[in-house]
Length: 626
Image (cartoon, rainbow, N blue to C red; front, side, top):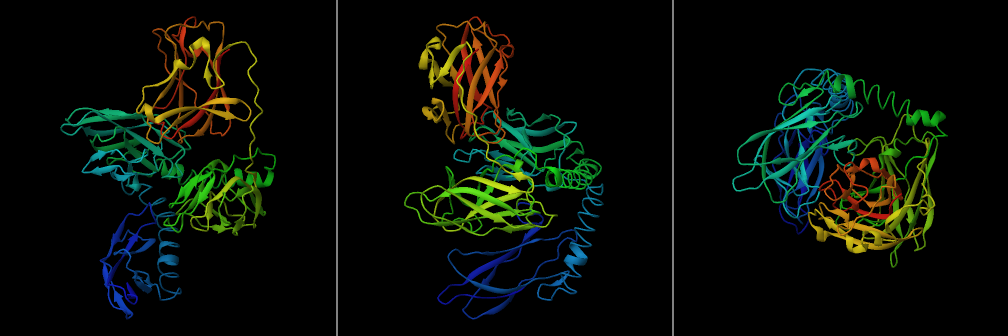
């Protein structure tokens, strides 16, 4: 590698170094760094760095440069890389592009067409049966989680989502049509306490995680190394998983975990799992989502795209756009978006509702939205971007023109989307704020494309219950039959002081009860129970309640219990659907096995999945037996 560099007038000697990665983050390995080069003097000089020979199987499609010293500017230009395909300054005819890495190498006859995709790793290489996948490498801590020499710790102060990721991407994809298992060896360090861990599978790394599922937590006990086994339930045959994570439940409670082995439809990760012949060769890649699934015979060719464009005008509108995935340091609070100084230049916001995809624009489309500037703010530009898939596989992509938002009054804006090539589909929809530290309120984003409009569903008009019954909670208060508000409390808390209740006003319903979990709250159970007296509800057939979710993490479920003296029944699943509106649940009394309905003491016990409550906010109304 050669390049020209110099230190600006008045500057000091500064070091730079270069890095090659297989693909942009997160799929970076194999990767390597070159030695740092000290740039000295104001005169422009040419520098040369030798690149050591690398394994013939390795290709690099991410090239990075770093400055070592902070606040020490350096001028660098004319960077030229010489590799097996030639030199980057040698034109495109017979060098790296046409006859080298791209046309005759990696792309046309190498990695893509005759290499890892078409005739290499996927079709005729490691996927089809040439090599085994290797062991699980659960070595990347994220969110503040710590790992060193197989010792995993979830420190106090780390993010609630802190955990660990497998970095051996050769294992993927996993499929569990027939279920599977995880075995691992674990122990508690000397002087430690019992600690729980659990595992999670996701479709892709964050943010495109669904479908996903968590396995049950496993309690690790004792200093002796023991082997543990977790059963993986069978999953839908259409689902593949290319993100495998582990979490430690208790804070500041280290646990040793090693020799993690996953057994799925393709075999085992401990040496006999060969990725061809299983989920990859005849499943997801060759005959599944790529060749005969989502793309050729699924959502693109015969599904949402072709079937919507050709004859899908009568389809139901898609779900609402959910532009809440901030990245790169971009900030979002209550529909107000900002691009703080100091955040990444690429900071922005992503739509997290994948149900709206794919978009196609064979015919021109549009985006409408409502926007305003907060009080004392200044006019601010925003713009939208469509990409084929989330980073890094973004092309083809396109940006729309800037829209200047001005004034404190909420105003509707429209942006025209030009027609795009009929072969292009878009499954990443982004928004950016142009000016630093200039907040702007944006809401009600609607995309109109060949499949219709993303729509803006409206909440149904509220109708108060009219059937005979016994109220439990109404107008944010527990009724006298159940002991009044003194009968309402929180139990089984991780940190009960981190859960609050408040009476808030609803436009249609009047007062409703709002329950808020802080970001530090792991678990708590809302209990309405009057042990002094009981109530006879045997004349009724169901327990009904209304719930509205204001904030919840993906995949978190809700559970309901009722009690009489000495009764015990499994929790009833009352997980709401993904909606911003009120939802009504009616649970038949037959679900409360073992409860004496002539003497109910606790008519309503509601809680999220264990240790999944952080940041949860919901409202409750009209709890009643009827």
